[in-house]
Length: 179
Image (cartoon, rainbow, N blue to C red):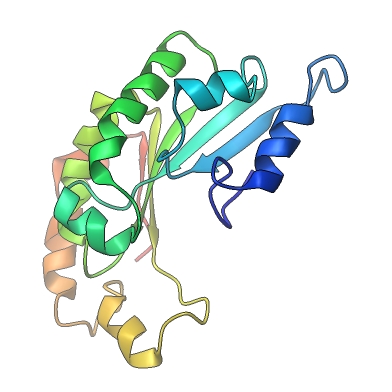
């Protein structure tokens, strides 16, 4: 559930999650894609998520508060540690089988990729998934070209390639965007 808005912030998704029961749907496994802003113990219990979750993906896109404030407008980086700690505890007690931290790579955040891997380690993520930014029609061509660090013609592309050489990014549990 989602990728088009946070499931914990959506009344529709919250109602759906409440209505899905193990008795009615014994084989169903819900995959959550969230920014973790509202993924806390209260939400977990209120939505009765125990034994329903098969995979959790947390989209964060930054390793520092300064960058998070820009790339995740409206999000509160200071809220993340407590929620990520709760999610880490769920994962460690095997409340769900897989935790993925994801990061959309762009000019504003590519330098934080190694630190993001270390952050994922701290919170027991099984995988780190880096994806290159896409333009879904929300950017002007000029703005997108400024952010698309994957373009070999981008002025910071050589710096991006240097970041990609970082040892943290070459672990088996780290997926990098294609060059």
